[in-house]
Image (cartoon, rainbow, N blue to C red; front, side, top):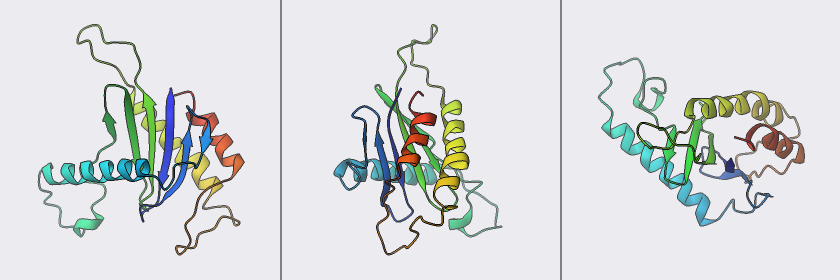
Length: 165
């Protein structure tokens, strides 16, 4: 079951927040919760980058070696799993899902279908995000304005695709 969904831009602004438990949209965009979530993701990515073996490919500058870098895709706790997808232009899509109560018989650990959830996030980016925001001529794209997505059709599409995970 999906608990919440967040979209952050490359300037660390929360563009969209959907809380599936409280059934609210964009109520916590500028709260400490959004800042803590983004800070946790950036910290884990930084640690992951530092612990990764050195990359000897000299094809790109360090900031551009996107394909060969170690990445954080999921963060799992006892109660929830955060699935993280970052687009090439720096957008972060974070889906927080309640952990399933089904246990693996051999190890007694919770099973989360991470690959299926990440594929669903990729489908969201491809089928909902790119159609609703970048291809929409009415969407604000000014980098000087704080953009918050308040489109009800966008929220309906988010609900259709992500609510029942």
